[in-house]
Amino acid sequence: MRAVDGVDIEVAPGEIYAFLGPNGAGKTTTVRVLTTLLRPTGGSARVAGHDVVAEAAEVRRSIGVALQEAALDPLMTGRELIRLQATLHGLPRRTGVERGEALLRRVGLEQAADRRVGTYSGGMRRRLDLASALVHEPEVLFLDEPTTGLDPVSRKDIWEEVSALNAEGTTVFLTTQYLEEADRLANRVGIIDAGRIVAEGTPASLKAEVGRPHLELGLADGRAEDAERVLAGLGRPLPPKEGKVLVEVAGGASDVAKVVRALDEAGIVVESLDLMEPTLDDVFVAKTGYHIEGDEEETGEHEVAAET
Amino acid sequence: MNARVVAALGGRSVRQTFRRPQLMAPIIVFPTLLLAIQTGGAGRAVDLPGFPQVDGFLDFMLAGAMIQATLLAGNSGGIALAVDIEMGFTDRLLAAPISRFALVLGRLAGTAALGAVAALWFIALGLVFGASIHEGVPGAIAIVILVSLTAVAFGGIGSAIALRTGSASIVQGLFPLVFVILFLSSAFFPANLMLDPAATVAEYNPLSFITEGVRELVISTLTAEAFWKAAASLCGIGLLSLGLSNLALRRRLRTGG
Image (cartoon, rainbow over all chains, first blue to last red; front, side):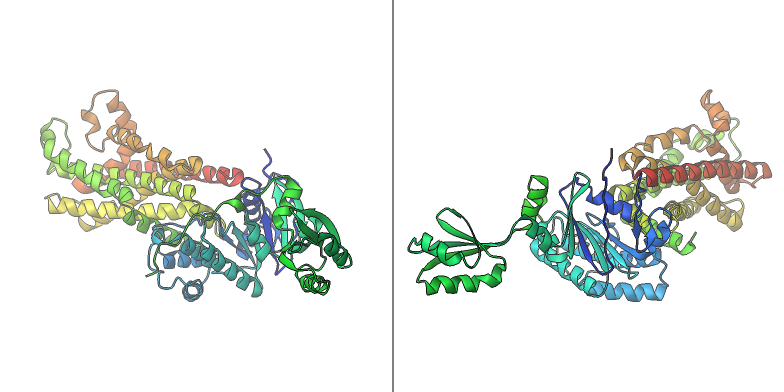
């Protein structure tokens, strides 16, 4: 059985590329191939300029990997893990210690560094995993579902860290089933479904493919026809919905002021106004015919472990 | 092969064993209990005609206890490796720019260290309870080395099964088999006093040759014949188990599971 087929991706240096898809779509398989953990049965892939099969060792030297479910040994302490990672990447002992300590500070785990990983919360584990993936200062960072199962606060922490790393020049390839994560972090998004890429582009361009932003206006005095006449010059009218006047506005939020001013000048009182923009979920539905399941689930885990 | 990486992984393996009682218990507690029960209950076996010349039954049993501990250390190492596979920790190692066989060698370095710990424990226990090492300190050092190498050789089998199956419960399921192999050797009883077919199996069981090598260092002087038989058995089992581990690792890397 082919887990992925016809996946053709190019990620530019310094980019954050999000691989978006539901469970079982082929995201992890793709990451395992790109990180040399799985030998492809066909096709080719190059990471940081190196072939993943013929130059696997060079690829491994160039990448940092934080895998799904944070594969950490619960019996090790955070400090032990990060030092082991430094040894695995051939850093001199002193450099490994210094860099490990700096990374533990960076991810806010210096106080918990001598505790066993088994006592860490989900968010702390992910931060440790991220720190250990960075110990050798990789060119390319692979993050396989870095925030799955995390509470919103931990998720935000990881996002901020990933953005900061990218700002420092690290290329990031992340897989996610969270639309918001892809939308917020990625320069470009590839949507994968059943092992195939079904759409690819910047979040804005993907959203533009499925529709433009529109305003939904609730009017106090029911002057819908007057409002439509006023708004005709500002955007494309859409069929009314639930008594509301709808108008497509190319400029999105920047057109709101113009619309309100025009209606006010015409003496039409606006009771409610909603700016509706296409989401990546709309893109996903348009491309696959169904909603992505992972994004609908509530985050399950809450940080309960105290950092002492 | 980077020795520093192997040492670091070996160190982790030892710490992991000490921090997980269910891995440590089979290496020290079970063999110690069995040694106490057998020495206390079957001590008069030394009076049987044909029993080797020993100062006491404990002297005879020490080698068996050490070999039992090494086999169980190898099994525990296999379980720990399978747990690493199950929780994805091996992926962390495989994604690093190291020789992939270092994953096996690191685990076996830890198993060797645990074998040395077990040997030292049983030597100390024997000395406390009246046994003596016939060959003295050099003999004790030779015992530690021999037992550590035995741990590596048999640990390779645990690693091969862990890599092939990726299942800690399957490796754990081999636990009873360890005792079958032990009881079908001269670890706990002289082969010449067993009944057939057990006697014949024990006579040719490589574990018997290894046990006799250790035992001779405890109770008398290691003869050249015993040394070569033990060395050949260790080499044979070691090469076989490392070869199987290598094959299992390659298959895992090729198929991803």
